[in-house]
Structure formats: structure tokens, C-alpha cells
Image (cartoon, rainbow over all chains, first blue to last red; front, side, top):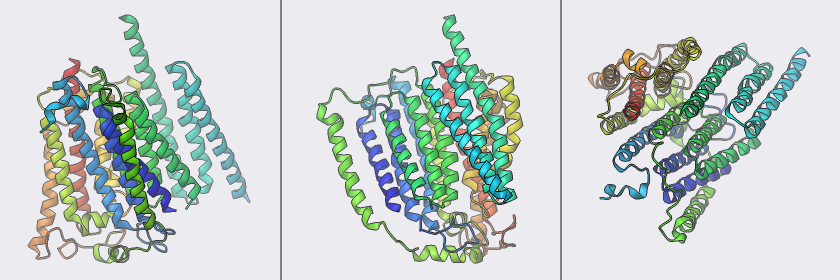
Length: 111
Length: 101
Length: 327
């Protein structure tokens, strides 16, 4: 049952990692990061699901699903959006200096 | 008895809505330019989604749930023409600019 | 639980993610990615996580897509680089990364496979589900977790939002806003004027009923930010800036943070600890009424102010540099 969710989550994570490793456009790197984040979110939520559980809103009929991963996921979504906004700000700034969005060209970011 | 009839009608509505959405997908894939594609794709929401919402009405069970569906449908009917209008206008503007230069 | 529906949705998530990665055209890739986000929100709703589904739908597929489009339109004049590195040897381009990723995926899946199957609730979650009403007075367990049991984490999270907003503002400072945009046509403006009160009402209902129904400060604040973005798109860039200056946005954001900390300090003053809810002088109220759950409505308002003002100022910082480019 939840194994499908786990499989999709692992697939999303690895696809995101592959994108970050291979693509040159900085936007594709951000897309990869977003996919990795989505994989983690999906993993947490499908881990929280209990067969037969209702949503964690009181009063419960029967048992509820695990509310703790939901709170974690909610936090992660908001922080992820802020991360991505910061990544875009970096891309826009670097684009003005380097006139490119090619991550191979961002040499001055090397420490 | 009457609920069964209503649910059957709802099922027909959902089937029609799915057909509309499918037709919209075909339109986006097959039509040649922006305007005809827009004409097709706006049917996915105005026809498809609204019909599916209408068809889901007998299955909600509560008056509050049915009211929500009606409100969602009304929102679609207001917002979708606006969005299509804005896209078509932007496309026309760009076309004019490209022809002018 | 409809397993086959869930399987179809998972399949579509995988397919849209793959398409988003493989598409050359960035604009299409972004739209496909937002579609992945909507599908994931549907899956979250099916997995009985309404709070997460709401957040995912509003933030990840709505706000982040608009940020993507702004960043893309700002850099579209630059020739985009070829997809993969063509100077490096061919085995390094695709094959080795693909191999590394598949090995990692297999390892992860191997580990998760042993975790799948029947699972019972951990002790802490059983406690939260059973005692939330008694200990906090709230009906939404996730909201109670965020704003009562783990309110300190939420304070940290709002600090992250603040750091991100300051980072974006510092990076994109120096542009000046030109009041150039006239917005869309009359029809769209009137339609938007018709819809805005309802969207604001929706945002307020999510925000103020966060302790009773799915939703809360994060989601409500994001819908408020969405209204600001819609205003900017429909009425032109100068409109919203002339109504709500960036100074007042800063004030709102700081006000949210101060409200949060003040509620926390009130707990210390009553000898109950930082950010404690019912042990501090907050009344639990009647369960299910608007003014219940002690400090949670106040904290929801604080988080909503913080998130709404923060996300809309991020959008405006990005728009600012966009207009400098157009000049």
C-alpha cells in the first residue's frame, strides 16, 4: 500500500539529484532541488498514513493518521518555498554579473 | 428512488465533463495557433470541470457540501473567461508588436 | 482508500516530473512542474493530510510557480546554455550520474521496503490524537502541534522566513520601481475587483479558523500574498506598491514576529515557560468556537502576518529588478 508512495518518493528524489548533477542551466538545478524536496514531502506524508485512519481533525471517528509528520511537512513546504525564492534571487543577481545562467560559468562562487 | 435517478443523471454529467476535458486535450494537441487552442482549452474548465462538479452534487450528502460545489463552479465560470480573455489579449498584443517591427 | 486512483496519481507524478526534467523549454518545464505540485496536493488530500494538501496547493504550486515565472522572464534575453556539459567526456555527461542516482535509489528503496507494511501509531502521536482537545482546546491536531506543542519550532521557522526575505531584498536591492505597468484590460480589472473580496474572505477564514479546521497562519498568509501578487499582475505593478508601501509590509512582518514573541513572553511572566498555552493565562474556551484554544488564534495571526508580508515582499523585490531591465 504505502510502498507505492515510497517508490514514487525515491524516484522523485533520485530524479532531482540526477537533474542537479547533469543539467547546466541554473533553472534546471532549481527544478532538481524542488523535485528532491517533493520526494521528501511525499515520503513523510505516505509514512504518516495509517490504513483506515481519518484526517487528524477532532472529533475522530476511529483512529487518525499520524499528525506529527504532517506538521513537519508543513514546515518543510514553507521553508522550501523560501529557499527557492533565495535561489532565484541568486540566479537573477549572478545573471546580471555573468550574463549567463550556466552553472559551469559561475566560477567566482568557488571558495 | 429519486436519489438514484439524481445520481444516474450526475453520472451522465460526469461522463459529459470527462468528454469535454478529453476534447480540450485533443484541441490543444491538434489546433494550429494560440486562439483556436485557447478556444479549445477554455472548454476544459467551463464545460468539463463545471459539469463534473454538477455531477458530483448528488453524491455530497450534505447541503453545505453541495453549496461548496456550487460556489466552486461559480468561481470557475467567473475566473475562466477572464483568464482566457487576458491570454488572448496578450497573444494579440505580441502578434501586433511582431508584425509592426 | 482507493488504491487504483492513488496508483494512477503516483504514475502521473513520476511522468510529469520526468517531463519537467527532460523538456528543453524552461517555461513548459515550469508549468509541468506546477502540475506535479497540484497532483501531489491531491495525493496528500487522499492520504488524509488536509493541512499539507492546502499548503502544497497554495505555496508549492501557486506562489513558487509565480516566482519561477518572474525569475524566468527576467533572464529570458540570455541565451540558455545547452542541456548537458559538452566539454566533459561523454561518460561523465549522463551515464555516471545516472548510475550513481540509480544505486542511491535502490539503496533507499531497499531501506524503505523493510519499513513498509502494517504500522501502528507511535506513542507520541497517540498522545497528541487523544489529548489535544484537553491540553490545548484546539480541534485541528496539526495546528495544535505547530502552535502549541512545538511552537518554538514555528518561531524558528518564521525566523527562517525573515532570513530569506532579507536575503532576497539585499541581493536584489538597487533597482528602482518604475510605475510603468498599466495592467490588463478593463474586463479583467472589473472581474478581479469582483473576486478579490471573496479571495480575501477565504484567506481570512483559513487564517482565523486555523485551530478548528485545516489551515492556519501559513496557508492564510500565503493566500494574502497571492492576492497581492494578483493585484500586481492585474492592475499593473504600480498599483499595489502605491497602496501598500514596502515600509508598511516591513512593519506588518515585524509586527507578526513581535506578537509571536510577546505571546511567548506572557507564558514566562505567568511562570509557565516560553510559548506555553493553557498553563499561561489563556482560556481554552468552548471547543469549536472561534475564540478557543488559548493563544493559538493569536499565534495564527502572527504567523499569517509574517508569511503574507514576507512572501509578497519577496515577489516585489523580484518584480523591482524586472522593471529596471525593461527600462
